Image (cartoon, rainbow, N blue to C red):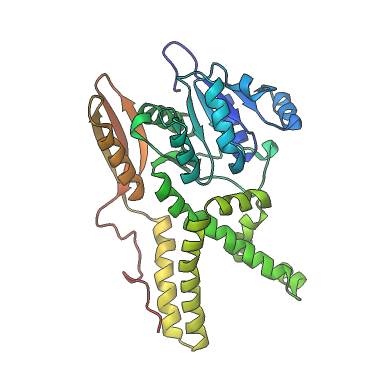
Length: 353
């Protein structure tokens, strides 16, 4: 457990839908003194009926807390951050769980909050919503992105320990810009593709027959189309430039497949799918090695942050963070320098004729 010396950690969770509710449940289950708040009165009542403390007012929820999780919809985060920072103690660490990071990170810089606010994004969830869908084990072994800054490195270290210890997630340090580029292709474009496939079926004259035959590939491919639609729209709009840029890459690959199909070019299709299959194999079988790295507490924080950001961009993650009298030690895993991740495909994307 991550505790203040001699005292229990005190936390607040603002917004208790699927993600916030799961954070609240896990903290409560772990014995943390946690208070929830949600703008919806029925949600607050539901939380109390399940034995958890819920404040009637946001300002009441954050008062005298050590850490506050901001878990409301993306458009509400800037205002919630300002309010929480105003009414929480100066030493209170603030973090969010939004699916885009550049905008809220820039907002924090503009308002002088980078010493206590650490942008975050747990890469976990389901297509369901609300506190009733929340699960305390949702984040186990999931990647949880945190964006470190030199002026807020103590807050970052504290959150790393909390997330590793309580949530048993893998902490991925990453810059806001790199995060938004990565999730555009790993998360946001898949939402577009799922919506496109489900939408095409919805307009098909054989819709009912398709649904009668749909098997695992269709269910898996359209799962996130069941996500609450406003949540998906907010996510896409907030990462619009990166999503459109990455969507062009996906469209180019689809065009290549379509061209090979139109030309009856079996060899080209095989090569393109062999190339794509390599990524799927790599996802399931990455070759990682452990590392341990120390930094002096009196040293240049920029060096520490640079190392952390390089680790996340390289596909690595943290499994430990220990702060001693004069040093901080990080442990974790990262891909080997020569790792090809078991990919049987070619080194380059097959060229289109």
